[in-house]
Amino acid sequence: MRGRLLGAVLIALAIVAPAAPARAAAGDGTPGDTNISFVGRWNTTNASAYVPYWAGAYLRVGFTGRTVKLKQRNTVDLWASIDGRAFTAFKGSGTINLTPTALAAGNHTLIVSYRQVAGSYTGDAVFQGLTLDAGATTFKAPARTGLVEFIGDSITAGTTSSQLAVTGYGFRTGERLGLDHTQIAIGGMCLSETADGCWAHETRYWMASGGQAGTAAWDFARYTAAGVVINLGTNDRSHGVTGPDFQAKYTTFLTRVRARFPNAKIFALRTFIGRYATETQAAVQARNAAGDAAVFYVDTTGWLPPDGLSDSVHPNDKGHQAVTDRLAPVLTAKL
Image (cartoon, rainbow, N blue to C red; front, side):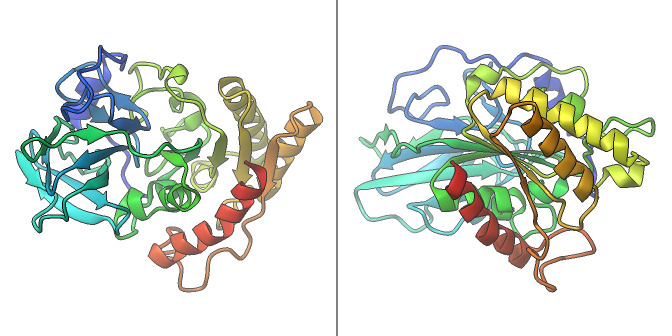
């Protein structure tokens, strides 16, 4: 699995608890503009520079006029979609023009997702505001009816797909369903903390930043998930975690996630290569036996086509799309 060390800039910013400051006036395009929705785990303590954590965090907003630009600090890779079109890649610093060809006059919607700062990538994922046409303004994009949280490792982070988190199955599934979505994932993560240092969700999922030890705890009051999809276990086997230990820790993790999201439907996926499938299903059954009927085991056997992997583990774009096509109906039936 891919690297798991965070960039130094993100680590430094993560030390400050990500409490939300007072908002700016709606419509001005600054980070505090109440028309802008920041989905996922964002550090909003600096009123002029909001920082996304984990994979797949994004901002969503409506705007008027014919052009829109991003105010960036230092060089960063990002993807943007306007009016529901395919995401386009951008790279730069300072002012980044998202509309080199002007749009038709009128109302538009924008989604921006920055590349995750992790592994060897240390881009400056910082949102400093929008620049619009003279007289133009932002507005609230049409509301979405709920949020799904995806918890995982490099597979859930979209590693090796063409646009990383944006072409990952979590992002695609959320967009397919018209729901907001998060990807709480970093390459190399396990469920279990291990002696040889595997980063683990059993301790780091509860943190605001991308799992860096010692950083602020995440305030789970910041958003509520209607659904939680867990895809963990691919890495634990390589770090010597036994089946019984994995099952026990998975059961505990499900219990703790339920405490954070009392009304969510929780979906535990069989890892796509089948590791700990029996233990994952047994953990779900343990929670069901304890009275939690809203936890479901999802058997993913056969979901990935033969040409759906970029290597022995990571789905490519075709693989992530295949997972999306199978997972979306499962979530629709329960949410």
